[in-house]
Image (cartoon, rainbow, N blue to C red; front, side, top):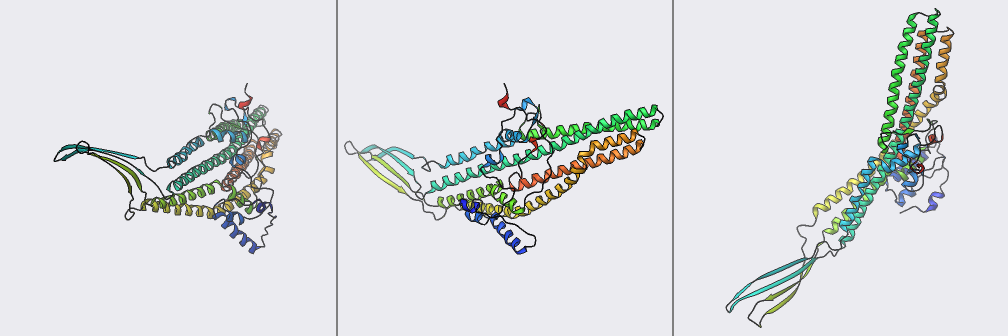
Length: 488
């Protein structure tokens, strides 16, 4: 059942204040009930919190929400690739999805297996034998045709259960599609961070090369000792090692991203754009509403419970007796002119006093109880997961605001200041090493904070089943990769 449109459109703006403790308790109870009730149930939707904010849970089906409407990229052409492009490619070519989509054949097979009108094939029996009598031996012939029927609507319930199986498999496929979407999104973030590490390593290497040239010039002028040159050469070697490691790290993240998306390893995807500005997540009621409407795991659990209930009803109905109706024709041998043909209608009906399909019925009921328990457990734990990941995003964003405004943009300028101070003789080579190492450590910590922020975002988006914000990375920096439609 679907909620009438007016229940959503008339939702007022709700402001939650920390001092309104009774209202928070009522809201928490409302949210808990809304999550535990099955997805799509009218009672669950009527209990959902009514809130408005700058973030609104997306409307539409899976393709409308999670699959961007952009051309399919061509991996053989190389070049920077936007997040939207690689998400579209992954939804079609991800190895995990290739396997998941093949499982839909199991649902179609279940429906096909439950569709025949009759439960069994007709049975034909033929008999022949001698009749030995006082006046001689004669031949008896008999033939019978019988068919078992279901009279309690077993086929309809069996087909309904098979359709629920297919619905559950489709829900699992959508859940897998979302997991691939989330993993590709997170891997794209990791690749961006790795690219920034490589950029920092390149800048450090260039700085060390310039510093070595300055040190050698000062040695020729007699301003420094040969030890300073040796130290500058050693630090240049260390910078080269760091640059090689950063380059390999960036390549590894690109290969991981390509493996998730089903991309060719010949030209690993190169993420386009730059790191996002950190943002705080929406309020808890907004996130919970999004999870209730779009969390694919909730839909899968709801479909599994519906399947288990349908199987239980089908198993109960299969316990009903199934009559067998037939016709039998017998030709009894006798002296010439005295043969007799007997035609009989037959009806047999089993008496369900011992076997009443007990095993299948109890198994189906147990599966229904398990599905109900899994649905309730996931719904009750989802609240704490959302709050845990939301607070992690807030903390990571707060750290990044400090790093992003004071550290990352000034790293190259700081290296120039160190170089200038060394050129003017204001600091010696040891002070250069200490200052460089300090700025490098802070730069690494800032990039680690970015990694933590993006991981927290991925965890929160995984909990609610939807992207928090439209991604803006592909709007900056690089041009998107060539598409298959743009090839000559």
